[in-house]
Image: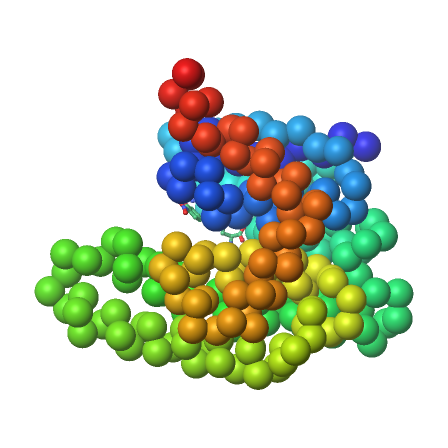
Length: 218
Ligand code: GTB
C-alpha cells in the first residue's frame, strides 16, 4: 500500500504546523503508516490535475492505491478505521470518539476559523473593532464548555483517540492568539497532544518543508 498526501509547497504559517496536512501526518504517524508527500503551489492547487483529486482545490489530499480522499475528517476517520491506534474496540466508545471528531470539526472549529479570519484578515475593515469581541465571545463560550467537559481528564473520552487528535489540531489554531491561556485545562490538553511522539514526528516533517532555511535554500 502506497500512501501519498499533498501539502503546501510553502505554508503561509512558515512551519507552525497549522495547515491541515499536519493532522493527517499526525494520524499517519499514530497508526504507523509510511507516506509520501507531494508539495503543491497555490497555483497548482487550482489546476485540473489537482482539482481531479480535490474539488475545492485545497490541500491536503490522500491517495492510497486507487482510493482518493479529501477533507481531513474523512481522511483521519479512514485511517482510524483501517488501522489500530486511533479508535477504541468497544463499539459505543468508538461511536463516541467519532462524535468528538465531528464536534471538533463542526462545533469547535467554525468559531475558531471566524476568529482567526477576523484577527488576521479583517483588521482594516471599518467594522473590525466591533466584530472581533463578538467572535471572541463565541470562541470563549465553546472553550468554556469544552473545558468543563474535559475536566481533569487527560483525554475527552478515556484513552487518546481520533477525537482528541482532531480536537487538539483544531485548538492549535488558537495558540498564536494566546486565547488558550485563559483555559489552562485546555492548554494542558493541547500540550499533551503536542507531546505525543507521533505529533512530534508529524510536526518535524512539515517543519522540514516549511522552515525558513529550507524555504530560502540556505
Ligand atoms: N475542510 C477542509 C479539510 O479539513 O480538509 C479544509 C481544507 C483547507 O482549508 N485547506 C487549506 C487550503 O488548501 C489549507 S489548511 N487553502 C488554500 C485554498 O483554499 O486555496 C488551512 C490553513 C491555511 C493556512 C494556515 N496558516 O498559514 O496558518 C493555516 C491553515
